[in-house]
Image (cartoon, rainbow, N blue to C red; front, side):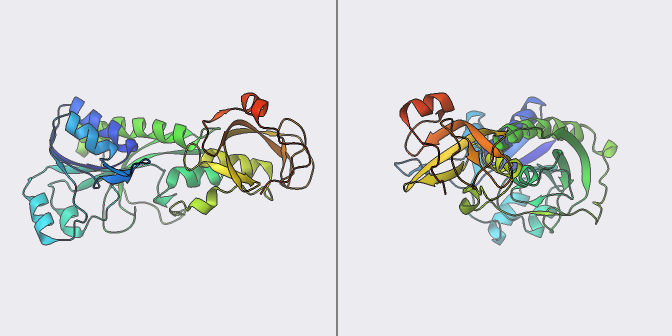
Length: 301
């Protein structure tokens, strides 16, 4: 097939790779424009942009697709289908209509649950037992289009980073399967019941809330690992917890219970496994405690 690929972050790269490996003709790759990154704030291409260039593919980085000139340039590619994976820009109706088979989206949830920007993190925070991938026929509504195929996976105690990587692989394989035989994967309307909205993650949500039960706090840690990193503050300094266990413990919420940095929650306690002090590398708890003494009775916020 003649395919336009539209994606931006690491999540989308496996799908691009899979399309090329399957022998499809990727006639253009759309990605968000380069953004300032790292301490030097140098303009840096997205993960998809960089991979597409390495594959020798044409890359286009419009700020918007609303202009008639951009829409005409898109239509002039005469694509059979557009494959979209975490692109990050609104697709106007002329874009959705231009490819012969429309636009197919790799979405990281089991729709209609968790429509929107942050389905992986929201599924973990909510304590869902499973999530998955949907290949969705895109329409004007927010992730409301009919679904052609799904694949599911257990969440268990996976972090958002682990789960995103797993779903990226599942989505790539499933998209190739669907494109191999569109007729065998007819689009089925989503049910009305069970729809939820996965709103964008705000940085303030990553502050650990020890007034919640330990189970919820541990989910918060996994949902924001590795980025932005769930954190607490002590003496004005920020500490990110990237992995933790639920453990027994009773005390005032946010209080340190022992010399192993066991932290009391509303019900139970957590103990970090991997922790990162601001400006320092992440490290296992035992290594962290050798150079950072946080005594029992300390209150964390």
